[in-house]
View 1 (tube, protein in one colour):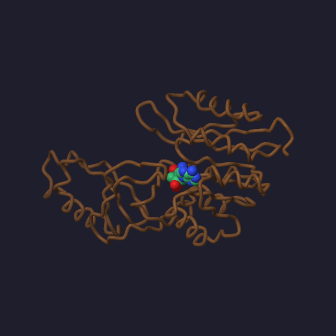
View 2: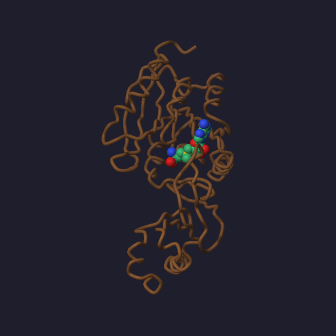
View 3: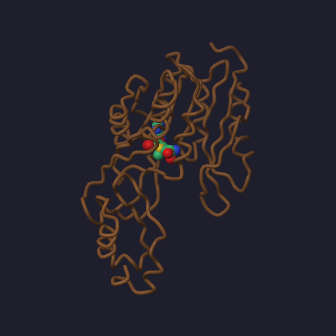
Length: 279
Ligand SMILES: C[S@@+](CC[C@H](N)C(=O)[O-])C[C@H]1O[C@@H](n2cnc3c(N)ncnc32)[C@H](O)[C@@H]1O
């Protein structure tokens, strides 16, 4: 980069970049944007195994948790990747769908918690972030994957085929608030409910509780906390469960990633038991 950038500009270069499949995604500070083409070209020369380079200009936004603006910079202008992680192929469009590198451990770890013949409802399934590894690595019986965004849903279905796990997953395109009730009314009871959206919306806990098995269902509940204060997040869930005639027990808590100054993205595993007999 030395022939391209002066000393001040060199100091502004990012310390790293995101790798998704054979695509490099970098963030560039404003003063470097005027030299983005030269930087892109130099990166492709330095790292010839990348097919293309994109610039991430924004955050993850909205109810679909979509990238705000990812711009093509250099190489092959095709944003669709097949990213391999823990032996799972995730196919998706990087300009339309998020893929958080900070959640890498949780994506695999969750599959190790799943017991034999469990029934799972993944309420915010996305492209199969959690469900694909569970289907591939655990002895799960069935996973109901609910996804609202039609673009993510399309890739979820493709990923189920590519990873050859069609017998394990039932994909459902819709709002989980309604779809969970339909599942519940049709008699589905879960061993595990994944509320894998950050932060998981409190107003969805009610419907999620309709899937409780008498013997206890474990809820994967994501949220944001300050310092080590897990209590508040758990108390919110416990309060709603209590109002719905359910008892809670906090089985475990995990740190996922740092979210900001003194803020942390965490996951709670909460076991819920119905007080009354399931009707
Ligand atoms: C981005 S994923 C979460 C990713 C995962 N926690 C991770 O970081 O690996 C959340 C998904 O929930 C979907 N979603 C949002 N609201 C929904 C709803 N009401 N019903 C079903 N899916 C929903 C979004 O479209 C998105 O694909």
